[in-house]
Image (cartoon, rainbow, N blue to C red; front, side, top):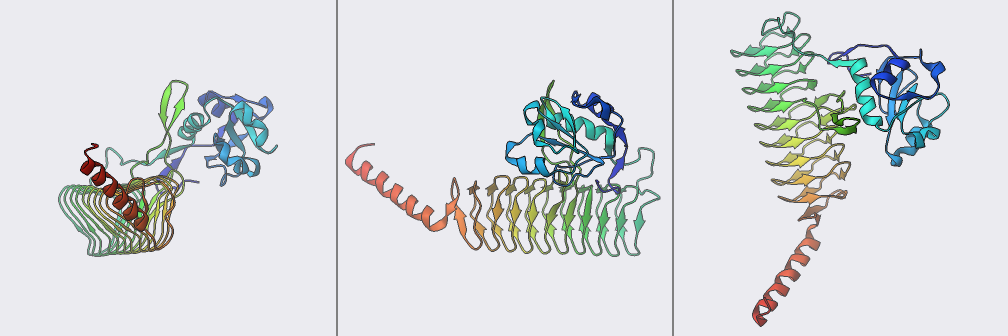
Length: 341
């Protein structure tokens, strides 16, 4: 179930309703009155949840799911257990996105509320500059300073002795103590997810949160996206430079360093003590082992073992990259000398 501090529950909804909004066919019409309360991934869904299956690599999750219902293509319907109601569609992800809109809604600032909502809770010693907006249910700890123009969304929790810079936007987030977030950073906006639907591409809902642990620093104009369902997490004492992007579901460990223009794609896990040089890029669903280093402008498409240093495009172990670069330089030099340009 999405965190109620950040998402309102709109359910329950019947399978007939969900089939209608998802442009799907309910395989067993007798189940049309079954009530669904929430949306969830296959592996965490229960009997009151609806999921979707579209990736053949996740067959195990489909066969063992406890979901009450699932959007699925016709050719995959037999993968689901008999306890799971089948909704047949050519576009399972897009259908699920439509169902989510019927079951959950992200909480937004109340349009008629004051800048400081009367349901926000501020401990003694909080310093607010002009133009700060704080939504309903938000909590801010003692000694935290919030600069002009910052926007703190409904339900957000900010710990003690934090520094929130000008025009920072924070939503769907839980933030620890002594965290520093510089000007223009955006924490908790929707991660990037899209799927093909009957009428073209549709945005996939992002029902997770951002969790930032103690003593983290986030530089100016950096972005940390909230999770699709699980949390995006930044471990304690990690330092993030300006103009860095951390995508949805990423887990960054403790004491990491991310230099400017680094981008980490969705669902990647970064261990403790990892260093990223400027403009490093990491593909999705990878593991970067603890103590690893990724060189400046490196493009990582494979898991990086703990303690290793990788660089280049595509990224590979440093010694291998040095040997290949030296060999290429010698070959290029020899051809130039012979006039074979």
